[in-house]
Image (cartoon, rainbow, N blue to C red):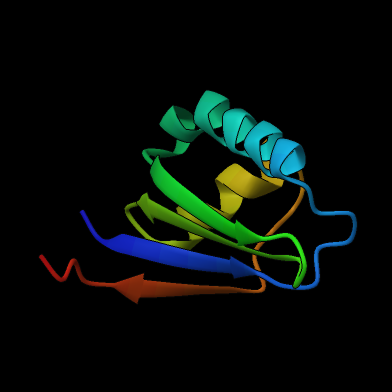
Length: 83
């Protein structure tokens, strides 16, 4: 299944707790769309979050975020594993 990295920019009030909460909501919804969120990274100072997932397509990855918490990504990019 394709891998996607999404980028959320300029997230106001970003905290580690907020990102963890949003990720938990993604995990609750992901199966409905055939998506598996694998990992996330964030920078509180910059208000930036990166999420890595396996998904059938970009639209499915976006649908999980939209339903789970409404924080849709600014960009979703298909990536390849470098291992």
